[in-house]
Every structure is written in structure tokens, then in C-alpha cells.
Length: 254
Length: 341
Ligand SMILES: Nc1ncnc2c1ncn2[C@@H]1O[C@H](COP(=O)(O)OP(=O)(O)O)[C@@H](O)[C@H]1O
Ligand SMILES: [Mg+2]
Image 1 (tube, helix red, strand yellow):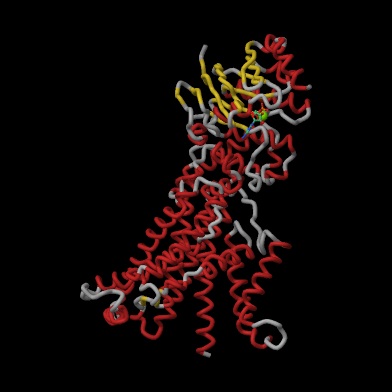
Image 2 (cartoon, chains in turn green, red):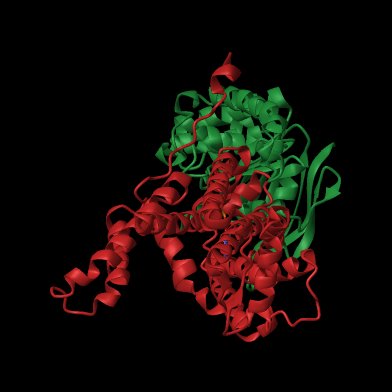
């Protein structure tokens, strides 16, 4: 198996509480891997450890054969591993277009020195604009390009999160509930889009979703998490029929 | 007639110097979200550096005996420098510009040192550290006499004395020109991709990190750039006053006034800063001019009228127009048309 991301024996504690407890997983390159689990099972915390927002107490994160444990998010992003958030976190008072342009990597105009020399960045800026409008078209957000981000609807904000990740030259995207808290119709559309994006760009995806049924048809491999631990892994059919997984979900309800 | 003109010129200097300080604050807080409540630190750094160095540079350039104690013989040294440059514009300009260049460097370094310990922490901790640093600077200025004479003042050479009668007018025009240049530079900076980057840092540091921006680095850069600019204001003000008095660099004059100006005008936009500075200065002048004619009607000493009315103005702005007179405008893509074809 061609491994893109490997998590080894990872533990993250809040006080004495182990939100992520000795988790190991291997994400295959060019595939969509799903991470499911009821609310509070530690999925977001695990992602935050992968992308450098949290520093885990134990364990390692290996991305593309490089140990990235404890690196800062901006360093990890520059290596092509891009996160999107469960709660959309755009730059609220900037326009949709600016939100995307900011995710473009390597614009010399973002240097405090070179920004003064327009010639040094104008080419990069117009490439970024082209790319941004292609992504806006793909996500059907092009009409809103000059709207401030805080005026968008919840579903549009979810799309903007995805757009931002696409803008950033991803080799791999880790998405925290990209279809969370949107209606099932839009949720299916988002997963179809992700599938399409993956095929076109060849990116690797690690996607979190807490509803079992929605993602079933779109993913290649599944990890199920419960109370900080991986309780099942394998093909979608296998995991979704696993007694332990069903029990974890039923248990979560009571 | 002459009196009216000098009254006007005085307002012009005030406007120019406060515009520079307010632009620096607007860069740090309005655009980048760093609440610099230690703004007076940078202005004081600029002023103290000018007080300590302009004369010493002058001594060196004009070949004045360097064994004289700079603070003790300060008035004499200054008049020796002034007479040496009376017919030598080159020396005068060299003192002026080399001092400002050193001020820029020193202020940037002090801005770095002052913010470094807390730049990674939440904004409110950084704010407290900066307040403390500004107070510390004033106490050092007051007590470490070799700097600017402690509780007495040092004088600054009249670097345009070779202009004769027009020296002071010429200095004022130079100060105004520098402030306009800084304004244009700021406008250019904030409309570049770097300007977009600093707004992103203001809006959401975590998201900025997660699109690959080194947030700590950007904040340090802006602290240094803003401090350097505020330092220039302190330096120009010292050249205008002809003296540097350590005690004059109070938080009221050089932190709170600029905050008031920036908030009234509108944060996150340089035109707002300009309007805010003009509004506050004009209001202050009008109050100062008319307050004694109101003496009979108000129940407290008119001395306080200025502070009370401006505090009231701030409260009203915060209640009814928190975005200021001129709110921030969303940026328009400049090259959208060409790129879409
Ligand atoms: N910053 C935090 N401090 C303390 N506890 C936390 C923190 N973040 C998450 N938790 C706890 O860790 C557990 C896992 O949370 P989370 O990773 O958000 O779960 P999920 O994303 O699977 O819903 C929850 O019990 C939550 O209350
Ligand atoms: Mg979560």
C-alpha cells in the first residue's frame, strides 16, 4: 500500500482525559478515507493533532514519509497537507474572492518587502485570480465572489471551506465534517463534488462525518472511532455492519 | 496676519505628526488587529533617540570638541552646531536625515523587543505588556540623564537654520511632506497582497495559519514597521519643538489621543485615520478657543472641557457608529477583468 499519512500510537490528553487514545491509522495515497464516530468520540481532536493545532502527548504523525509531529500548521500547509474546519472559519470581513486568494501559496506580494514592487507579484496575483474563479465556478459560488464572507449561508460557507483548501495546492486534505449540519441533499452533492475533485486533482482525502449513511457510497476505506479509540476499520460495508460500530452509535444515543 | 499664519502652521504640524502616529496605530490595530496600547513607547523612542543623537551627530559632523559633556553643555553645543550649519545646508540635512534613519532602525528594534515576549499570547496580554513597556520607557527617559537629560530637557539643532527667516516654515513643510509620503506608502501597502494578508491575521489567526501564513512572523513585522513609523513622528515632533523633554511623552498625548482619532475616523482604513485626526484636532482647537466664553454657563472648571467633550465624543461614536466616520470598505479586485478573458 502506498501510504500518504500515517498516525502512530497517537494520544492527546485534556488534563487526565484521553480525547484521543493510542490511535494508529494509515491513509492510502489517492483514496478517500472516512473517519466516522459519534459526537465526542475524538475525531476533531485527532485531526487537530494531525494538522499541528494540538501537540499530541504521545505518538507520531508521518506525512509523505516526513515526521511532522509538533510542527506548526503553516509549515504543514506549505507541505501540501491542508485542513478544513467543522465550524466554517472564513475571514469574515473579507470577500469570498479574498478568502480564496489568501489560500494561494507562494504569492511574492505577501512578503513585506516585495509587496512594494508590484512587478514582482502582479503575475502571481493574476494566476491566483484565474485559479480562484475556476474554483468558484466549480463550487457554484462565482456569483458571490465580491460578497463579504459573513453574508453567506451555512451551506455556502461549507463550500468556501472546501474552496479554500483547493486553492492551497493540496496533496492531501483533511476535512472535518465537510457535510456536517447541512441538509442531506446538499450533503450528497458535497460528497459527489469531493469524489470529482479527488479524481481530477489526484488528491488524498481524509474526511470526517458523524452520520453513517451519508458517505457510504463515496469512500474507499473507513475508520470508526469511539471514546478516543479506533474500534473498527475496513471497507465501508464491513465497518457499517460491524456490531461494535452499531453499538457505539446506539450507546451514544442513550 | 502673521499671527494667523503661525497659528495655522502650528495646526499643520499637529495634524501631520498625529497623522503619522494614527496611521501607525491603524496599521497595527485597524489592519492587523494588534491592540497597541503602548503607542507612546514608539513615539518616545523616536523623540529620545532624536534628543540623544541629533546633537551628537551634529558635534561629530561639525567637528566640535567631543570631550564636552553633551547634557551639561547642551545649550552651548546646540548653538555651536547651529552656527556651524547656518551657511551649510548639506551638514544640516545630513544631521536631519541621518537622525531619522537611525530613529527608524532603533524604533523598529524597540518595537520588536517590546512585543516579542507576548506576541504569541492572546491580544489582551500583549496589550498589558505594551502599556507597561511604554511606562518603562518614560521612566528610563526621566531617570537616565545621559539620554535626554532626565527631568530637564535637551535641545535639538535647528537643522534648517540655513533657510534664514523661513527655517521654521520650511521644517513644517518638510514634516507635512513626510506625513503625506507615509500616507501614500500605507495606502499602497494595504492594497497589495500583503495588506490582504494582515487583514486575514486580524480576522482569524488560526485560519491564517491553516492557509500557510506564519502569523507570528507577520505580527512581528507589523509591530516593527508600525513602531518605526510612530518613531518618525516622535523625531519630527522633536525637530519641530527644538527640544526633547522626557516627561512630555505621556500615554494621554501619544497613546490615547491617537486611539481616539483612529476610532472616530474609522479603523482599518487610512482615509478614516486622516479624517479622524483632522476632526479631533479641529474640535480641540475650537474648544480651546471658545472655552473661556463658556465659563459662565458650565458648573466645572473649563480646563477640563476639552477632555470631557472628547471622551463624550468617543462614547457617542462607540454607541452609534462603532465603525467610525468612514467605515472600512471591502477590497475590489483590480485586475479581475483582464484575468477573466
Ligand atoms: N479543548 C478541549 N478541552 C477539553 N476537552 C476537550 C477539548 N476539545 C475537545 N474536548 C473533549 O474531547 C472529546 C472529543 O471531542 P472532539 O474531538 O471534538 O469529538 P468529535 O469531533 O468526535 O465530536 C469530547 O469529550 C470533548 O468534550
Ligand atoms: Mg468534531
